Image 1 (cartoon, helix red, strand yellow):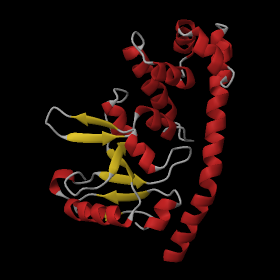
Image 2 (spheres, helix red, strand yellow; image 1 turned 90 degrees about the vertical axis):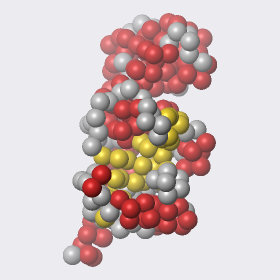
Image 3 (spheres, one colour; image 1 turned 180 degrees about the horizontal axis):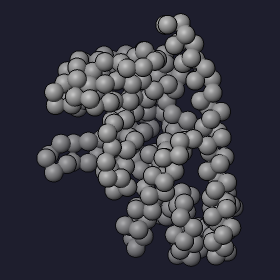
Length: 236
């Protein structure tokens, strides 16, 4: 992608690996800028990878702009079988230009440079209806908190208080930052319970947060799934 000048950001499981919250991921998930020039560059990269579209919808800008994911399988010897999933619009996630401005850039031990969704944006993107995303979301925030709690910036403190999903850690963070916890707790019921030291109440509130997010994600995908079914029917 970098070699072909593609404007994209790594997300999904492989991004979680970079943030220390996962050990392995088979697929490559990318947030992709939906512009004609960028899509042409992406097509060149796909050709280099010997990648083909493996499901509906087809790789067209209109589907990306409506929030669909497009799926590819690579056949290049160095990436044979690798699946690439791309999206340009995600529920509750900012437009790509803002994601790009907030991106995290990491250099690997081999000297490769990788652009990732920022941690805050990756956490937001993980708030889906899928069972596997919620343990990962919890680990992402836990790992960041445990690694940085002794010297967290004001922005990081606010992130932890808004996003921590482990009751014990949320209670600890609230005790370490009582003024901000009181303020943000007026907007987050789980944090309000954590301020009171109520572990059971915080856990119940966190479960309700998850239920509401899953429900919102199902509603978001209902019309898109219906559109995919129409595409499958029309192409059969």
